[in-house]
Amino acid sequence: MNQTSPPPAPTPFTPYQKLVIPLLALLQFTVVLDFMVLAPLGDMLMKSLAIGPRQFGVVVSSYAFSAGASGIMAAGFADKFDRKKLLLFFYAGFVVGTLACALSTSYELLLAARIITGLFGGVIGAISMAIIADLFTLQQRGRVMGTVQMGFAASQVLGIPIGLYLANHWGWHSTFLMIVGLSVLIGIAIVAKIRPITEHLALQSDKSPFLHLWHTMAKGSYQTGFVATAFLSIGGFMLMPFGSAYLINNIHISAEQLPMVFLFTGLASIITMPLIGKLSDRVDKFMLFVAGSALAVLMTLIYTNLGPSPLWEVLVINIIMFAGIMSRMIPSTALTTSLPDLQDRGAFMSINASLQQMAGGLAAVAAGMIVTQKSPGSPLEHYNVLGLVVSAVIIICCFLMYRVSVLVKKKLAPAVPAQAVAA
Image 1 (cartoon, helix red, strand yellow):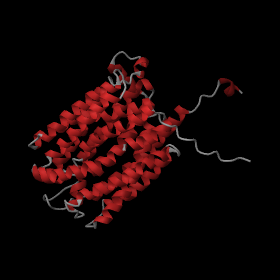
Image 2: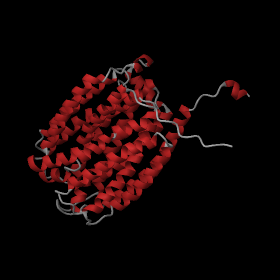
Image 3: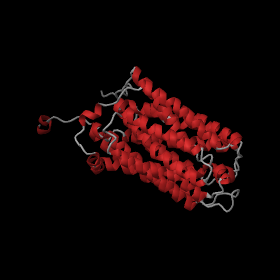
């Protein structure tokens, strides 16, 4: 009588892997916080610098476009160096760019500073993903992604509320100074604790970085992953830039209540993300992605059509919506990082991050053209249209991610011996 076999036991982590995971999570925390904090500061920045939604959309997208450009330029070299050294180089540039944001005194200076920050910060995530793919098996990556992506939740729980508190008392410049201080400490820890990562160097066949870039971009299976990741980023970039302005001007959440929204949403994400990561290592990753997408579509449509609402209702909607978003991000990232071969991994991750950032930049610009505001204190108009566009993109992304899932399963399937085929 056939019996259903129990799910395989998760592959345990080594002591060194247990050290690498929190360091990458902390690094992710600072990079995500630098990008995420701009949206909560949006209402303050627009009033402080006397700019409108369209100009603020340009500030947000400038980071994305510069990150996309640097990802393409760095892709050919990404597999030519020790990944640790490459990570530290771009992290140092990210710190300099964030410091320039803190010292900006006008719209033009802030725009230039965001471009510098994007040039370096946009590549860091790609290098981190390449390190994770090098050091962890597919059966471990769901849990690793669940932990490293907690940097996203931690930025909401700790970073954004503290950043808003500092901004309310000492100006928005102080928020970026806080990120600089944290980043310096984390960079020192990476220098001291992470070993060189050089195994991929022995497999390189393309002497020219540009030839390596071209070969990586030309592979059909890789192109499927690139397109899927680009669509994955569009939704977040469209809704996020005007999140704080929407909460304050449309839903009538006060500036004092705003940190509470990010705090409780982030706390809920810290609880759910490791659970989603563990679940991703036990069930079919694509099916988890589809379930998260369905939940994200439902909650996005509800959220973008809200009127003035009590704080508790906004918290519940945000918590459920982010649970859906994270149920998409963790399994999709685990699948996508399994597409490239070891010798192409750095280039693939850099191109992937580049296209993700550029798609997000276009989405932010498009959102700035859709959303309008008659005066600095009036409600945002057409925000519900963004909800419809984002929902359509999520549905399209499901079809693309299905193709990625098929490619990954085909790649990881054991080879069939020639004798078996003949029989």
